[in-house]
Length: 479
Image (cartoon, rainbow, N blue to C red; front, side, top):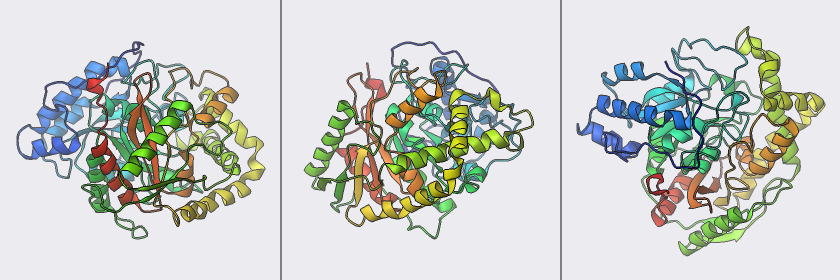
């Protein structure tokens, strides 16, 4: 079990694509080659390990490598839609035999005894894990950076953030180490790193996938479990496979989506959020370009307002603080007797302190956040899909969202950056981030699509159509 750290910093593209058993295939293509006997699971695993080792020092995306066990597992039979396809699991869920460190140095995690409930579902698709990916402390930030350790770097440009909190997973998929990786999303943490790293990131509806133990304890279940991929078909096949393992009877089935629908949609467009910050010009231009493409494809497109008012921002921020307060106050019981809240970073401590000042508002906050389920659903009485930016401005350089700065400065920046994604977490609605465009610096620039509760199928059908209309730019072609 190895740890990677201290990557070099440089304004360059780093990827691991090469002529090996993985090639440039997505998970679907790789699984087909394995099933046809063209490559073995061991060959694929060895290639993925070699790729991880080649870009590991530059990206710093692996929290724990579990290569020896992966090679042992490679020689055993595999079943599932992605049988034998290499992956990684985000380091905030339990994998038997590995610690769950949550990106924190405030305690020393012991190896988990069993896989968590969601990990069991995730691995049921046949994927083979190489280890665990890095995240910012407790997943609270939108950039995978740390107080006293090297950051995770964006493979499209090492000077930039890979997003968060699934930043390690996104960096490993974008760079070609693995074609699919576990991610989860409590405020945008599937969609934000997918946007930063040029990936497909679908946050499922609340209850669509098996919740992990901690997810079940929340008064409002904002966390969704899922994956980041490089292709729409991989995301669609992953969702179908996850649904075969567990189907929530309260939600309409997705089933396997294999291409676009002929149905033309009514699309509402939101360019600015309810935060005080204005969407930046590059991002604004990209949303209008996506809207124009949708209109050219025959969809009805018109501007519409956000379905919530500015009080949502304060409510979600207080709930964000509540999550930190719970960990800070109960860390010894939840994480281990050596937990030291004074060793947490500026963001974790600041969030907890902010909540303490607002604790009396908790009942009102919970009431209003629960109400967003209905407010969100109402807009889909008029529209099939809502288009918005994934983020309010382009991907920042590393350091801009560093937890070494004061809490007040960092928190203001985070609110301004993550202005669109939290609504889907509070409301429970599904959303997908797609890498439709690129920035003036050559980084991916995403568009965000939301649909009614349980309507992932419409999002995937639309994603297939957009991917075919404007195929995503490949990192292998970046300069």
